[in-house]
Image 1 (tube, rainbow, N blue to C red):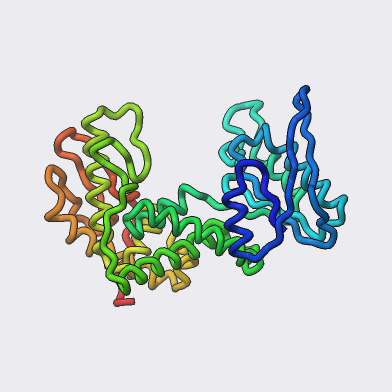
Image 2 (image 1 turned 60 degrees about the vertical axis):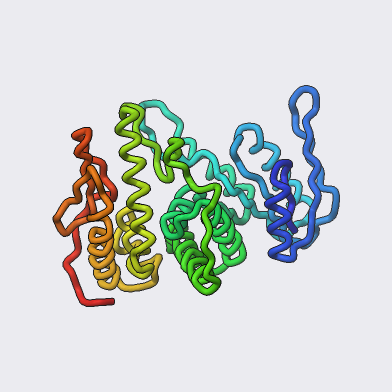
Length: 323
């Protein structure tokens, strides 16, 4: 049974449609003094209940969420889980200064005591990965949603010894490749009105440092767009390896786990992908120079005297055979 907290109805409806699940209505309101009132409008005895609640405002929602989870158990629900498209309290995972609370650990303990399972996803990393594979923001948003839906339906197949991130990335790469193949079959050519507008200052990836000048930010955004266009010309079998290693920062072992190939195959694909990307970029980069070494591509801005990395630098694997 799918039960949506207020504000999560649209996503919960999509989940119900995809899974063929029943609806469990929830009433949540506040008394004048701020206390929460929680009530299920139907029975859930013997059912698996999934509470859908994005935790973008965790302090306001968490207590009511815990009340709902405990109430579902009291009403004899078989299992109670949480679907949280955004999971809060992930940044403070260590004590950076003396006396700080390690809130991510405490919040995780709070949730684990109330729920049998948790499904969430790293929205920004997954979206960025898919965008770098597809080059279209609107299509990437659709694929990202499909990744989460497939993860939810396949959560029982998740190996507890594996990393949740690499498991999600594996699904994301597979869905992105399926999307590209669908486009190829249907010969679809279109420009998304939601694509990042570099001229308007929109960044497709990470925001630049606040210390950078407007000219430096513009140059960096232009360079990112150039690299993104070039990535779309790299054969997909090599592109996925380069994106995961050089842009997402995964280790060779993690890339191998995502792509379900050997580490040797990963290194070979990275060598060939970097070479292809370097050859494509060489005539495209005006006002920048590309490092001639064999490692990850690094572009240098000649206009402002600052180095702007196009990829995270790292050791270059020895070139192997074609994989």
